[in-house]
Length: 365
Image (tube, rainbow, N blue to C red):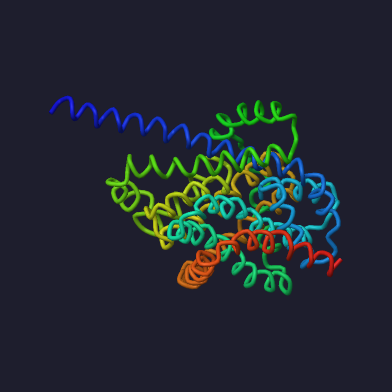
């Protein structure tokens, strides 16, 4: 009996160690993927951001630029610098920030492709990732016209900027970046800083890590999933929202925190109803880094841009918190269709995050 218990414990211990190993590879793959996209697109993104001519163009420039660099924080930081330097006006910067909010969800949508070989699992994972897309798009559809005709976000941002301008800022380093950046740098150097090779390696690591993360996660915690998730992080919608804010502010990347729950959703451990408030919280958390940086600089324009990003996300939550069934039902319908037509998943990413923005930018410039 004692030997049997020891064997079970050792199996759990081995599974836990292997799970942590593949979790690290998963995080590393996202870091490498973001790095490869930055090699492809950062210079192009910067040039794009300086060419905005109207709010609609700015919206899709923000979407495309963020999809290219896979970081809304990077896009927002560039915009902050451009506004501070007088490169673009405040009213032109706000639509770009809205677009950045939509573009940042490309990462978790790509992550969901790791489940594509298993239909039911893929449907759950894809719906969990797409609900973030749907929420951001719906928020833009409601808020963008209001901002265009009234400029209310700019007024609110300037109001808070005047209150906070004399408040000192703070900064801190992401613990996840601290443990993955050295390895990512080493791999990047090893691959000769070739963007295409880095991208291929990142996808290979992503798919490998996802496959075995889910396998070992089920072995370790499937019997305790209800206790871990239902009674802690996802106990209520408010719990999910708050944890989404805190975890994203801590790791300074909504791409990471939302991508981490996609495998959990795919494994059936978290329902889309629980994922939705968490992703809304992640939207708030991702604005904290830019806000702290803006407070630290003391630059009024920088602070106003950061505040407009925060207020946009708060407004989106205030609107859709009361009607969560709208984005959830839309996401479930998209996921159901995609699960039965799995080749559509890749087209969805290419069309939504790249083809439509490029077309709109071309037609409106």
